[in-house]
Length: 130
Image (cartoon, rainbow, N blue to C red; front, top):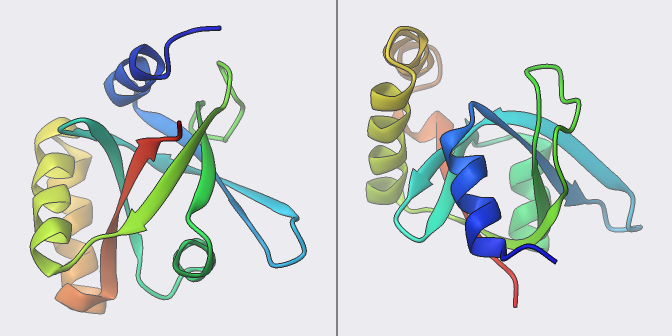
């Protein structure tokens, strides 16, 4: 089995990950998202009121896999733990998104800030399980 750290490195270098969260009844819900490397973890950025945020708040057990923009997995899923970031952590993730996605990142972050306000989005930190 591949080292989860190296899988996270590859995912962090990619454009998208398929973040799978779980409903109360155990049903998986997979969502393709932009991904950035955040130190020894990955991070994604999403709307504060999204279903995935509610599911992570309830249970942080997730899986992540590299994927296409449409969510087609391009590699194996890795079990991980997701946690919601505070305002400073979320701002750090916004900066990482703007840096990595040079053209669309800054525009998307700014439009989101205008539409939802600073508290309308949140960073999610993803660390490998085990």
